[in-house]
Image 1 (cartoon, rainbow, N blue to C red):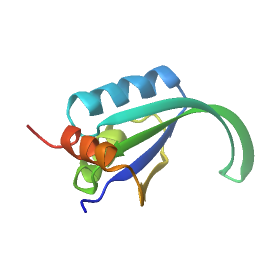
Image 2 (image 1 turned 180 degrees about the vertical axis):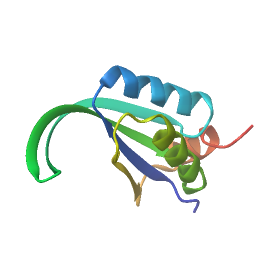
Image 3 (image 1 turned 90 degrees about the vertical axis):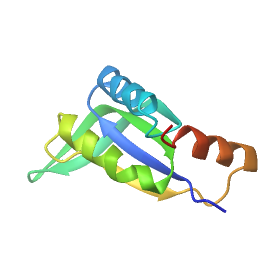
Length: 106
């Protein structure tokens, strides 16, 4: 069974994140990206902050993650962006196949 994974990226602006996700989907680095608003509490430079952010959840294959990470780091407005990859341990066969097909170079 071919592996698939989820990549989670947060950003301060939903429109910026939607634009990034569209580029990643267009370039076949991921099959889909869901962008949702989130409330975030974090420690940064010794202080605790509360902020509204956007969260993108991408579906892709592990081979595409390094390029997703590199592109995100290149364009992201944060000094230390959150980019996390998690394996998808279970998915329907049709959905898994679709992720693989859509995340593969033509």
